[in-house]
Amino acid sequence: MIRVRFVERDGGVREVMAEAGDSLLRVAQLADQPLEGTCEGQMACSTCHVILASADFDAVPPASAVEEDMLDLASGATRTSRLACQIVLTAAMDRITVAIPPESRNMQRG
Image 1 (tube, rainbow, N blue to C red):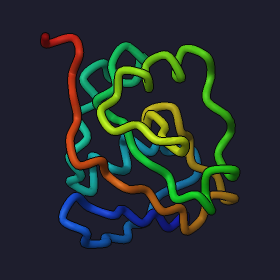
Image 2 (cartoon, rainbow, N blue to C red; image 1 turned 180 degrees about the horizontal axis):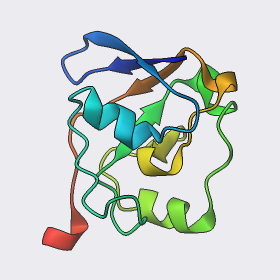
Image 3 (cartoon, rainbow, N blue to C red; image 1 turned 90 degrees about the horizontal axis):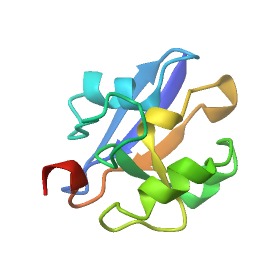
């Protein structure tokens, strides 16, 4: 099992358990985190934008060029921003800390 810590918009922290191979978006949605995932993991939106803790950023494989382009559209993107739909959890990511940005923007809705 992999522990995932979500830093919620109000500053609270919620730790949940996940399985290796789960996408971070799925885990977040099951944990009632406010990640829309409008495109259902197809990298056509940025509504699953999360901010990884600096210490955890290198444990995650690098973003693809397409993901980087989508992150350019994300509200409040930082150096450690990622799309949760593109992160597949592994044992090396145990205790990963993920912040939910203060807002999200679905560019497909105008």
